[in-house]
Amino acid sequence: MKKLFLHIALIFCAVIACVSCGDKPRTVEYPLISAGNTTTLDVVSVDLNDSTTVLGVNAYYRPGYWIRIASDSRLEADGKSYALISADGIELDKEVYMPESGKMDFALTFEPLPLSTKKFDFIEGDDEGAFKLWDIDLTRNTPPAYPDGLPAALKKEPAGVTLTDPVFEIGETTLNIHLLNNRPDYSKNWTIYANNMSGEQQQIPFKVDDEGNAVVRFDQYGTTQLIILNEGGLAHFLSFWVDPCETVNVYLDMNRTGAMVMRNREEDMQSSHDWIYTDGKYSDLSRLYGASNLRKYQFNLYDGEFADYHMTGDEYFDMMTSKYQACSDSIANADAPDAAKEMAQLTLKNNFLQAIAEYRYLLGLNYRMQNNAWRERVPEDSITAVLTDEHFKKAVGIVDPSDKKLMYNDCAIGLMDWTPYGASNDLSKSVGMYGMMADKAQALTLTQADLDTLRTLSDPFFAAACDSIFQRSTRLAEKLKEQTIVQPTPDVPADKVFDAIVAPHLGKVVVVDLWNTWCGPCKAALKANEPLKEGELADDDIVWIYIADESSALPTYLSMIPDIKGLHYRLNAEQKKAISSRFGVDGIPYYIIVDRKGNAVGRPDLRDHNLYIKTIKEKLAE
Image (cartoon, rainbow, N blue to C red; front, side, top):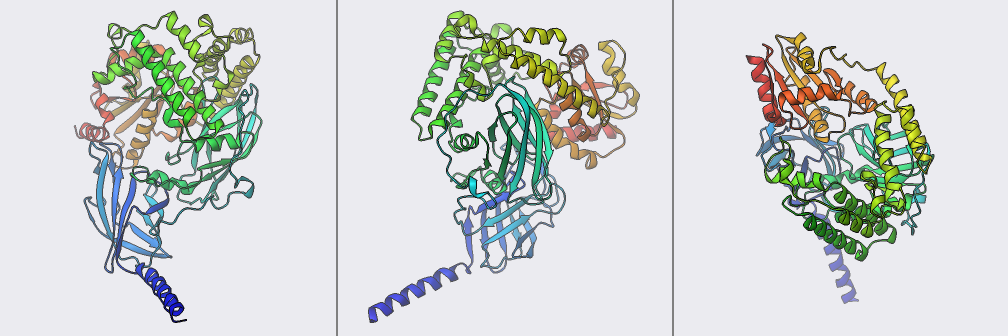
């Protein structure tokens, strides 16, 4: 009995010790963060003591761009606020520019949280765009197996999946979007990117309501991989598949944004459950592939380091086949479900065919990188590699471009006609023609003769899809024209268009931005620069002019420009070429500054955000 009493007493003391230890001053390294509205800040340490609470913060952002921490930042826990006292390593309320490393460390000291605090929020301010991190967890408890609010029917492990050929049909798809663990400070603006079989990436913007729900309907062309992203790009690579005419419920766990906040940490901070859950035909496939971590076996074709431009054709082909086989073997041997491995193999096969079809372009990227020659054309004689018919025939022997399942993801089979090299059907020729005609349909330049040509293909889907895309684009363009003002292009020769556009603004500083809707860096720059018009560069003596060309699909273009303050022009290819030749345009975004006297100078260096602001201010002061 004495031993039993002693044993119970020891357990009681241990419990008391464990409970009380949470009330002692302590430092918690790498606390778990449930959610955030930013990927710029990560709280990597929390020091709690009787007099202060100190957050160790890592900041990650584009070199040359600025961040700012407001002096009215606060911590919130259990309904109470704790004010910011001081900062070390960053000046409060000041625009602080990121170094070349893109990383900055600093400490923020707050009024003391209670030592018993288990979770708290970091609120950088109440202005739109203020940094916010929610449920910074000092207990490091394991997250739940499934997010709160997920229907019971989806709280199950995905079952085995057999991939059949994708569906070649047209119809209206309905998505019922539900944000789980939603917070009102998340952006309500979202976009669905539909990677259609034509190679078109249809963009479908939508807004969620205050509860985080939305219904999205859109025309769909064949089985399609969809990607869904928040305006701030917070969500991970959230991809899933749907068939035309399906009605699919989509559940996104916003608490997984915390994983994005913690993405730069060395230790694994991922939650145990998935980002995205769907019902419908491809529910299990989407989850299996999303959780498989097999994307690491895809080729990074466009990083400039994929291949060496000094290679011969044989060297390039041998390198490609070796990489393909190594990645294919890794996928085959991976500890992953068969369906996920099959989808990863299909993605890899597309990578391989794309690397063969676009070999000169990919080698040109390496030339640009090695020679820091991003602003000039790649000399024709700098790349000596030539892939012969024998190379292409060997490629078809490795990956069959006739496999319809390749069209589940970004499809490369239409980049060239593989039938002369042994492809067993004309699918690649059909897809290539479909892609070209779909582009014309989006640009509203598709003709009856084009449709007649498409009708000669073996599958009537391709003609019907292009006709539908053309009709959809026409309806949308007419609707948006009523809401959006595009400036009429001056009726002058192509080489005079630029001068005619800027002439009415003599005496002011004109900032001309050459861009297009499909240009990722352009969109990133627009997002960074747009707030300046209401901030540092708010001045009636600045005229903002945006010039795109007809490669920007008209419906997408008209839907984007209302959010870009300025004068908008959409030029034809000849007019845009004249401007490019005059100013030596090396790519986009590209900036042209016109001073108060009308002198115009091309300034590609203004891609540096710091220099962009500084130069415009200097021109205003002249």
